[in-house]
Image 1 (cartoon, rainbow, N blue to C red):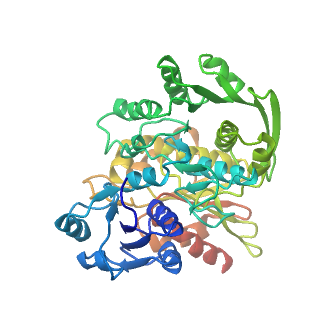
Image 2: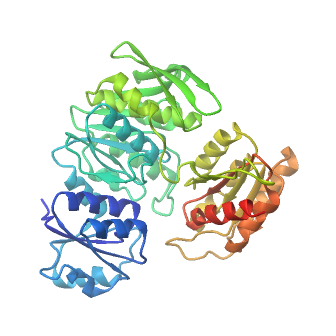
Image 3: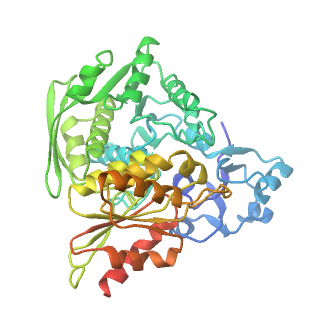
Length: 482
């Protein structure tokens, strides 16, 4: 076991790092850290007792003042190898571990309920947390987003369960030994890390092998790749159970369906859902305030995981009815109450893969005309999926595409957001809509573009994994001040 009495976290303000920092503080560890900027999570952790510096420097390892860290935690994907704190830790001989290693240690001794998949991890994990809390379980949890209801992304609970996301982007999900492992879907992504699509699929097979001998692998039957992963796991002797619709269950009879969605009725403000639990021979009913078929599937996964963890099915379902969403997952930022844009709703969403974009826009279109402001994330992802992004964004009625948010990547010659807008134009030439399509490399001009495009009652969505989230405020101001 790693000595966690004094922990230094590089990039402590990130969604994942801030969560484990919060749990460490709750458990009595001395926590220090650094980040490139001040932020709401950094300020919250300081208030809880963490010592945090803005900017990276070797002397940050001494922030606590009365002794050096017993371990330094980093994200190998996000933090460069020449980071001065990493170099100083190596010089002093202080152990350096990944966040996934730290999370694995924090989960030791708990019933581990882990959610993996290309899409939907944060939302499904969050649904499971809210459902388990409603059932009185008080789980510990660490998720990649902030629960709207709880206002936090992590918690040191009094219960026996620990609920967390299992991230496949750098194969760190293989660090864990889950008792209940859920795979929501599998679709090639993070090909900048994996050598091939086959390698990406393979990491989920390896994750299935990490399930404890008495545990369960839970797979979505409506996603053929996840269901096929389950079918292969069945042949290897792993306990596998599925969830999904009747048609999907019939396509994959080798995986027993534990949670069958027998009814879903979409209303203007919610979706009514009925799920049949095979083991209990019980039908449970609940309502979801978050729209979309993908949310119905996510809720069934959360319900089934909670039941496998031994909780009361109807109490779990009642919790799902109370689920109000996660920050940056179809998060309502404001409504224009009067004026020429009366009734416009502005939402923010983290979708950054074509399948996620399509799912959000499909759900949003059920509620009216949609204007999307999309910021591509990573040059490699944009180049690989340019055609798929164009097809997904074409579901909207009007599109503004910002320049690529490069994050950890350097620009690639010849790759900018116009490869997406050009693709949308080609789709529109055949099928019509969206109109207009705007390529806007000037971040500050986007709110004005929206004001020229939007109509009363529209849904405006800022979308992407970068800093596009900062635009919801200026867009609301531009619309309200018109």
